[in-house]
Image (cartoon, rainbow over all chains, first blue to last red; front, side):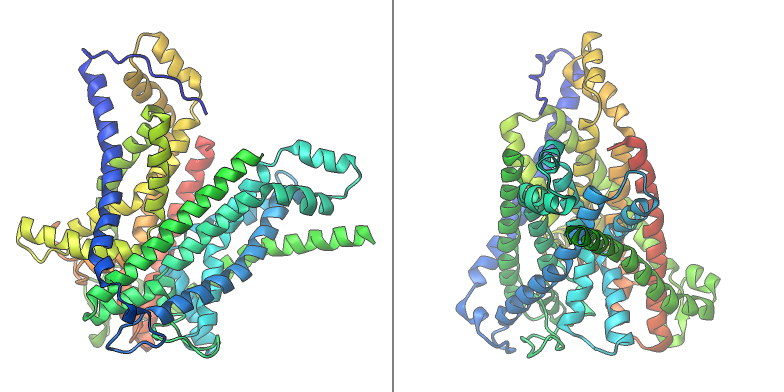
Length: 283
Length: 283
């Protein structure tokens, strides 16, 4: 990184002082907003984290979030199971196989870019139309999972492709030189070197799934239990917060859920950053 | 044998890459097939320009929602873009290395916080604040703009920072050599050169803001009328879908899907702007 030491500021020049002040103030403002947000959620929610919120079944008395946590884990794992192989496969195609200037590649990139710009409510509506209405499933965990799998696909694709591209070509050339084919080179050389970078993207995707609400309300639904099968309805933690908000009685419980959600997201972000760091060091 | 595996896997990777193309097609087909008939049944002019939304009386005019979405998005830009761009300048050019290691992850975390948590924060912090400041209900265009402005910060900061970093160092050095201070060189030589990249970040922020759902419905008031002041309640297109899809049937439901079609067209246009700007800036 190019980080030159700035030349000494000319104290007399008011414009420079002003410019420096506003950039600094903006950065402080951004930081302050984040710190205040986190501190506020913790302050409002942490005192309400009681054991009754982690009971196995949800009742109107305990407003337990444990079923929602279980559903969140289920939906996260299943969406990853669907989206990660497809995302990594696409990225391998784009980075390792496709020739430059290929029309198909342009189309794939364009659609991936489009997918990543689509708001989650549109995904939700699409999932609702496809799974709930056309396939007549009603609200199901599986429908929610499939919807989210499509939603996180472009994220996995992009981060994986970036990770693959930052593996130096000399690695590939070395592998080819030793007589390995393209397939073997990809699986034995390129993927392992890119693994931490890919992992960092996957963890970011987990963060998106965990925090998603709009795409799930009308696909997985808002039932406050762990369904017996994947064809039952169940709410995730974020949807749980929304449901508590719209019922209007459980603000304290909603804030307690917010604390759990926030801790999860902060943890995932830290993990992703750690993986990314390992990656840049490793190569 | 090996060449068979090579070919098979090559096709498999291509197949996975085509999943995203299929997904976009599927989303388009389902949205348009379910939404367009309603638009023609209601009449395109009445639907897009009608000022009354009363599903009970078969009045489906989404003009207030289109205006609402545009208002809160514009408001979010006014709030978020200056702070975001200046923070990006700080990160790219003013920040000591040590501070960078704190501020950068903080910005990433801001992007990872679920929108439902932003919504709760807005509802219990911003709304009462507006109530005491202005003596109104507290929910409205201004509150939603403030919250969305905060939410788009990481998007604007991320893209702008890489745009600023992509400007050749010689621009900055040239300005320094002509006797400009560090601040003046950054703002008057580097920043103008990063213009298209920063604009791409802003456009991406517009996409985020217009598509945001959960946070907005909690702080915008959701009245389906064209707001007459900054403090008046407002309903966005996204909010319209989430609020009514749960109980809508027949033409009402189709009108909501048609709302999503309009939103989707906006998003496609925004995406198009983004990719054009991105290509031009080479970020």
